Length: 90
Image (cartoon, rainbow, N blue to C red; front, side, top):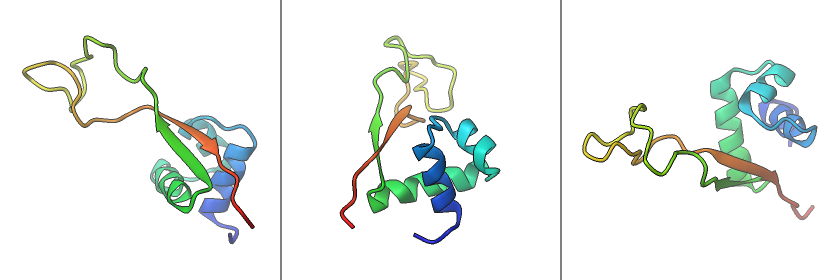
């Protein structure tokens, strides 16, 4: 992988950055670039992403744009993800 945004984001995660804000502080990249890089690193197999069950309370928050007017719970909105490094064959 060449030195660029993907490498910077991967190195930040390897160094222990756990959130987009931490990656931003360590790399200086924009949040859009970080999200795009994380998505690409997952597709390439360098990271794995797993939805975490603690993203919304069981009763729903009702305060985000993804909340259903009828149920008050999120339907397709943002999901809290846990990222982890994967081992890739060289």
